[in-house]
Amino acid sequence: FTSDRDGNLEIYVMNANGTGQTRLTNSGQADFNPAFSPDGTKIIFTSTRSGNAELWIMNANGTSPTRLTTNMAIDSGAVWSSTNRIAFASRRDGNLEIYAIDPNGANLARLTNNTTPDINPDWSADGTKIAFSSFRDGNFEIYVMNANGSGQTRLTNKAGADTQPDLR
Image (cartoon, rainbow, N blue to C red; front, top):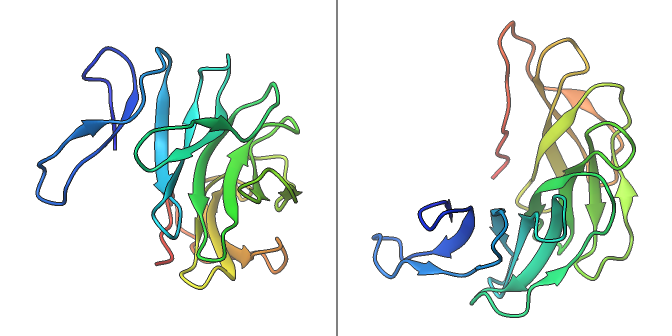
């Protein structure tokens, strides 16, 4: 989880009953949006420690933080798939779009391409689909697509904003 209890956003872990709360990051900058790898050994997170919001990966105990993305745009909201791919939202092409990347930084792929924001990606349990929120119809709706970005289909169509899908 993320907390600013020590003055800025940092990443913590705790037991399911709330005990054992342990601070994992101490960068002096904002560290947020943590997500565990499928095997539980790594955590991907967003950090501003390099000057802007980039994706970082660290061991589950907080050691060895390594920068995954490097660009002048915002990268955030990363989620790990069961097939060991990472989906995230980025402004690297001027607008918030959904991207996927391998944990070693290889195989970066832009999955959406719209003039309005696509955000909040979430993988299906089997890693074959990604749900996300898109503003392409004038308000945020939930969409789903194949892991390669094909087959983008709107799932909701209501007057209010529909965001933060969960396919699990």
